[in-house]
Amino acid sequence: FDEELYLSLVRLGDSCLHIEEPASSIVFWLDAIDERPDRPEAYACLAKLFESIGKNVLAFKFASDGAVCAPSKDRLFVDYGAKQLCREIRDRIADAAIDQKQAKK
Image (cartoon, rainbow, N blue to C red):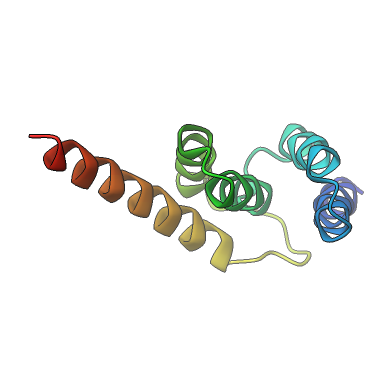
């Protein structure tokens, strides 16, 4: 039942975000990570949320963690695009930081 619990926590986070309760979303997604740290979906949710509100250090941290998740042995409802999304967010934030640093020169 570990996979079901993990997925339930991710979906609860998604639902809370939908009703504009981002603090609750964060708690559910962090609980999901505690439950299954080798799955990238919750990392991707956190990275996307933090990027959207301009918290790029946090977004980069969660995106980086999600991008290097080991391949999951889970079989239920695995979102294979979540790891790629983490890579894209991580790279986008890194590129923006480089551009900002070069602009200051």
